[in-house]
Image (cartoon, rainbow, N blue to C red; front, side, top):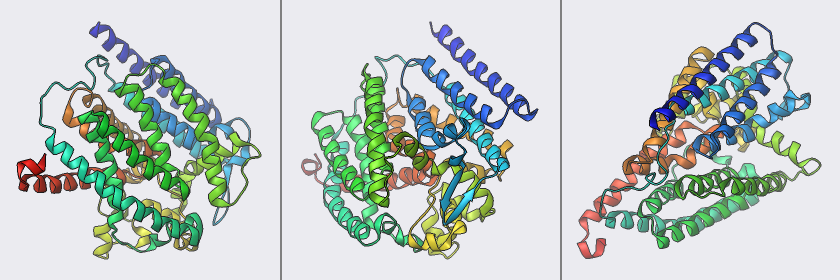
Length: 448
């Protein structure tokens, strides 16, 4: 049976690689257009995903990529060229050359993404997945969870009040009006505490702990939605589907995914209209994909913004931004690739708090020296690494704890930064180590 599964995986991986090479050949010889290349790439990934007949990490991740980034391209590929125009500071109307470059970039990105996931996929027995047999003392885990929980109970209301004042004063852009100045805030600890609690809640696997986590997460997400921040909500909803499908092994997860989509589509449109003051209800489906698809233009925006400094690229990949700004190595405009692009497109918009966002794909492209031939192998290696951690997390508690820490940020990567992921790991280690020192210094009765 194992040989048959291994053989099936190799066949699927080899077939996808051959199809990808064939598409590259057809496109390079001008035998197919960029529109056809793009539509075929999306269709191939969807077909291969459906063939798996189960929802996995790669299914949810690729769903996020297609829905929140590539939906605009799908609409454009079927003849609606209005989606290739965008306003940010000024109007950008992409010509056929830039449209071809965009569709080529996203087509190859999508295919190499799925090749990375499927090449390192491994079937783990459902009964043994996430069932760790090693016996450990959960006292420190409970102590750390309690510290994060009660700290969050204090920090979330303070953070929510601060965000609400900024939102009332300057709208959605008011939340980011301080992006031109570097400052450290203890309120940011919430974003580290919540993934730590998620990881611990699943490891401890007790009803009371899980309910406490759901309560804290609900407070955090409600506070985010009130001021128009949708990213965290979307990411944690995908985490919830992963929890049902992979961790709890529920059979109705596909139905839940459909329900989630039916809820999120109008909700996200309402939030967009609410925070921008515009009406987007004339065509909900069309508006949803075009409003979500701003990241679709990121490769184009990056190409016209020029090559960023090396420290800008490094700060986007690693938690070094604060250090670079403190040492005056970087400025707010060169803090990350996102700020580099946003300030380059419109310095006045950037100073007011507006930004075009970020994307792991553009960051890896910059890291690859703006060379597509280098970018695609780098992309393959990065997501192969993510998939290896995912597979190992099914049978190893240590990998599982790290995987749960970064899972929300994995789903944010299409419209987020690698720096968010590496920062989560780095600062979580510091936070947990700090709590461990306190735990070891307490009398045993208090520690428990």
